[in-house]
Image 1 (cartoon, rainbow, N blue to C red):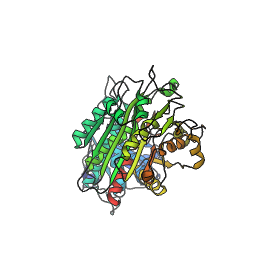
Image 2 (image 1 turned 30 degrees about the horizontal axis):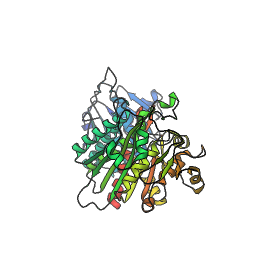
Image 3 (image 1 turned 90 degrees about the horizontal axis):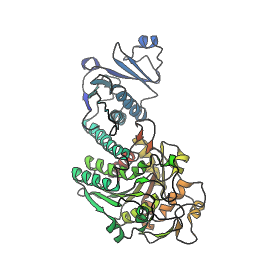
Image 4 (image 1 turned 180 degrees about the vertical axis):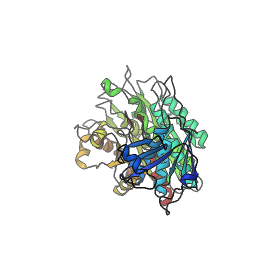
Length: 480
């Protein structure tokens, strides 16, 4: 996406803007709008659904249900996807809705440019370079978007695109060391503090659960700590991300079909890095830390085993009954480290469980934690950002399922049911009493990587968690 699309707001009418093509949204199948050639569309039996391009007038019609953020975001993305590989360098589009709607539309258009072709031998460069937003007079109460709104959309889209690129990268390239180097680059570019803990430092920190997961890998583990510290910040947020650059399941080996796409097990960690990048670019007046546990979960003679007992940084012992439940072991130690920073809010993002995908589907992230008001707040803001989320409730009966006979806790539940929740409960066991009401766990296993186009996402990585995280932090910066 980098610097290849320019979106310009012009205080002119439609017929005063010279563009090679136009985009018109048909709202709720209403073909009687003054920018719709009803007679012409009826000749082709277009009834206001889907996408239809009239070559004579060079007008792309896109049917949407209503004028709201979700519909406009997806429609903006669809418009750019349609034109980007054709021989049009620009198109024009009118003002639709208020600032929230226009922000969504612009973000969708920026995201429509995204494609991942790093490993393609024949790369196709898009021709589309510019979009004009013109004040066509759809509704006099609506105005052109302000420049800061457009800049914000570009910053968020850039962070999402960067995260998608890294999540889509193959595990041979995107190793824990690569994530550490990428983080250093982000820190240098955006003036963040960056502290990288290697194996020696992890041992000193007594991160034995984290280190056990890494033991059979030829690639060393790293804890990445990014910090954004503006002057006079009154609130501190700490984000924690699961950065499993590859997960074969360890000795509890995954079936081959389930091993494919496990390069995406680093999505939570990458999302955290992307959020820090955006927060710094937006210059939000709030202190934000990002903690990423970067490692692989592999097999070998030194692999940790089912039946092992691990001693975590927090002091709790963990019985291992399945080495494929490894992300929670890494997060347990990373959450312990994060709590030492004394956060006002603590949020982790992780592709933690297939059970979350079973329960909520491919497109929805699960929200868990102990504070109902905080969960409600995150849910509202995530939905507002365009990400689909739903709350999953803890309860005392499920807590009993992670009890161990020989250790403080077991890394898998004694039942196959409610697996996403019991994984969240496992993490909750490592949250100290003073932070329980400040902590949220976001399981992004469903939407992080989907092998088909959906909404504003292409095949592969979606940068799940980035929009929601930015919206949440921005709201805290504004309202506390």
